[in-house]
Length: 373
Ligand SMILES: Cc1cc2nc3c(=O)[nH]c(=O)nc-3n(C[C@H](O)[C@H](O)[C@H](O)COP(=O)(O)OP(=O)(O)OC[C@H]3O[C@@H](n4cnc5c(N)ncnc54)[C@H](O)[C@@H]3O)c2cc1C
Image (tube, rainbow, N blue to C red):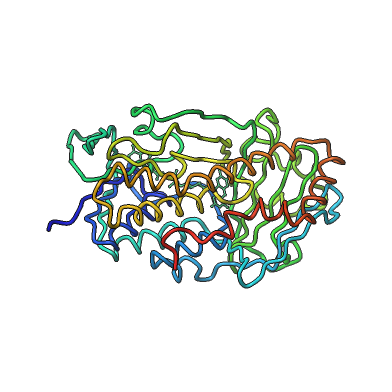
């Protein structure tokens, strides 16, 4: 019997995880990426246990975590540097921080090893519920399954009218990757979320060589989101971090946070995965983790099922509740960030001590994804 065929639009974390997982299950896989090279926007990335389990399942773990940082703890601090909450890591509660490009390339390598074909400069402009895709160069192809993993601006999703809501959350981040210096400005091994006013500076060691900083603020903070970074303005907000902020220089990019919800995650033979289906504010560091979980879960759902639309419904019913829970908690976190400083500090310190609240926040991180060993 001929192998089933899947055409995937987008070579981000979702598309490449799906590519690896389907190819490992004997499918013939082709990924279309409109960019000329594999690249990922942003700087570093958090991968929690759920993401690590997916990476193991698709045989990308060793490459992905090679040289990565495992933080002893994550801390939240107020404008005076006082500790509000501390979440220690542990052998089964790791948070690994890694340069994004390394993570992306490790997943791509796993997909290629399993036999997936990745076509660069190949843009998918349309997909039909019958499984036909059309490319920008005029070619078309028919497949048993089409996966729209084309990110938050997904054209396929919008053309199939699956979008239920797309909410701009009113905040965003400037992200930078700095060469790590082994002096007092970046000797700290913990991940630290520094809050002051409406601004937050996330300090993230990212392996031996890199330090990842994410500076988040509200979208109407024109001074705070200016690029190149207004180091003076940020140093006034975080005087104790001045030396670190002054190193940023010309680096950085601004991204606004969005939340996506769909009426349903599939239409006929087209499945929508990753940010295209469920983008979320990055407060829990789970957008990529959820993208990888839903992509692996999709391959598992289709492993033995003959009726593809029915399998897609079963996949959505299984994966969607946890991902929507994660979106909700992440959005709530953004709202807490906007509270006046004293109220926010109080909320963080209560939330850090409440076992129930920690469980809600960590539910995705502690999850055993479908298909993980
Ligand atoms: C500030 C910030 C910090 C974050 N931090 C974390 C974190 O620490 N941990 C975490 O897990 N997540 C994090 N996330 C979320 C994470 O980056 C995303 O959830 C993840 O990248 C989504 O992957 P994706 O593959 O769905 O989409 P994308 O990464 O957007 O990939 C989509 C791909 O599709 C391609 N494409 C688009 N249209 C087409 C087309 N028509 N044809 C062909 N190709 C196309 C694009 O070029 C792109 O390569 C963060 C997000 C932000 C904004």
